Image (cartoon, rainbow, N blue to C red; front, side):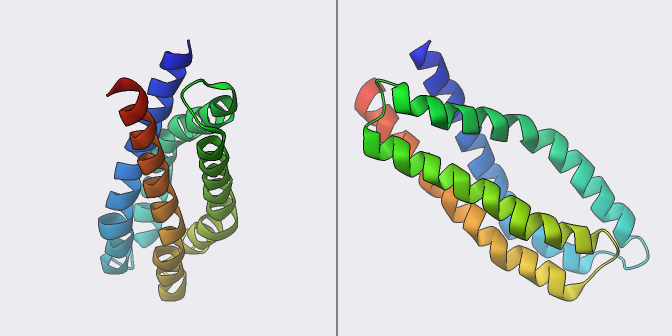
Length: 143
């Protein structure tokens, strides 16, 4: 069971890392180019579809990061750092990115879009660091 949790943890984190890099470098900057007359519909489409894609992996990742404390695969420092990054991800999402999305949901707002791109680096770096931790764990135990 421990290995299954590690693999689910790894899959979700790697998936979310790839997704956040795409969103950060391509998708969020594209908001600036959206047609102003249809931007609300574009943003609503983005929120609905993205939510369906990220909720389950984020929840699995969060649970797996808690399970890492009991896992034979993780050193205590890796579990603590990984869990801390998950907390940072969730806090950033709900205190920075969600409010920016709420403003954009009312129509394009250049300041909100710029804030979204700027603050999303917190999540991009955090997921990248989580992927590095998991790469180290996998290399040590499965390599």
